[in-house]
Image (cartoon, rainbow, N blue to C red; front, side, top):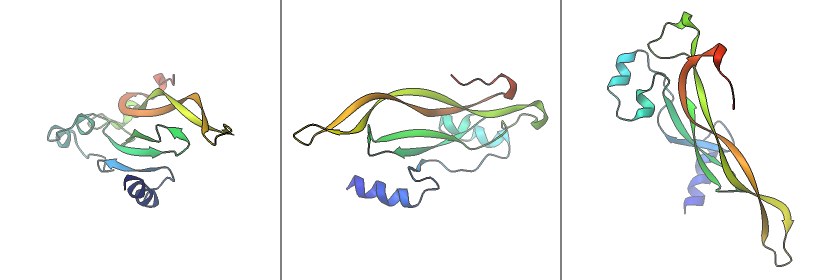
Length: 130
């Protein structure tokens, strides 16, 4: 079943709630490597790979998130101050509370989950989190 697959993959992860969904972790050595790639996440100056974030007390329990492959922008002078920064998005979710209804059903409350949806090349001094 898919739940068993998720549990097996969680055991292989560096984080208890994530496993690799798509892509490798390797930061490209040159900008020429980017042009031969097929997916936009691999063509970016700050490429990323995706992970599955799993939380059984959240609906949806599985969310795909991006992780930056590089600290500095590919093909940009390292001394320029430009670096790879995550792009965040606040996603509405439902969170299971500790309370149950008399019939045993869980009660869920509206909430927000900040997820990373990609990575971008930006000047470190101008990065702001929203």
